[in-house]
Length: 239
Image 1 (cartoon, rainbow, N blue to C red):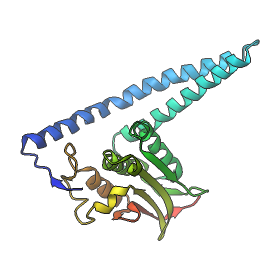
Image 2 (image 1 turned 45 degrees about the vertical axis):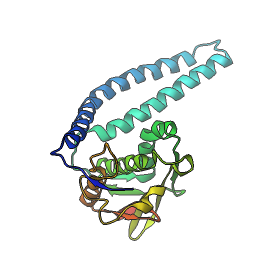
Image 3 (image 1 turned 135 degrees about the horizontal axis):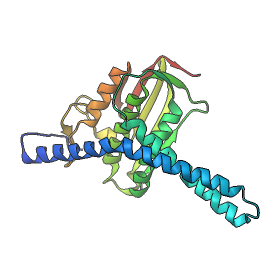
Image 4 (image 1 turned 180 degrees about the vertical axis):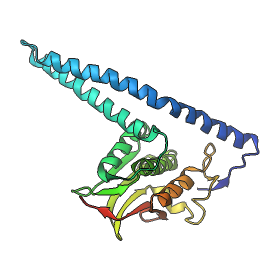
């Protein structure tokens, strides 16, 4: 992939910046909308459970109500994942289930992966560890890496549209690796530079921001063509 430097003083650069600003304004609306959706979902779940208690409910009726509950619960999970990254930034240190966090972030891109015919694999250990870490910042790191991988394979042939995320033991902590076949073409020295991109519409800030966030939470973000982009988190408790 050929890297290019984005010049914000050109019409093309300003157009890319304007597009990014528009997306940011959508993010400002998410929390309020998500709050209302959660209230509506609460009513759906509560009334569906009440209907299930009605006598004379047929087996087919019970099955349909189970489907309603399953759909509402999945919708609630999506809203929860979305609000987790849409909250205003603040310093945070909590015990975070790394497996649950990765599943949550994967859920946000599930539709895009299916729609783009991208083969996605999430590899977790049998017992997923917990880390004392800034959860909101780690969520953004993972999301930036997933979006970067998605963009990288979007135009690849069907057999090369692959994204693999793996949580594994690292030196003095745990590693989260995000790999796709295109990483072998990247230069580890320049890939994290701001405004450096291989896309015709991107700004080239996602990887730069991801590495900055990784360092701010006491970790690192590196590129290894064999493993992909790897977030190292020190001092992890397997809890």
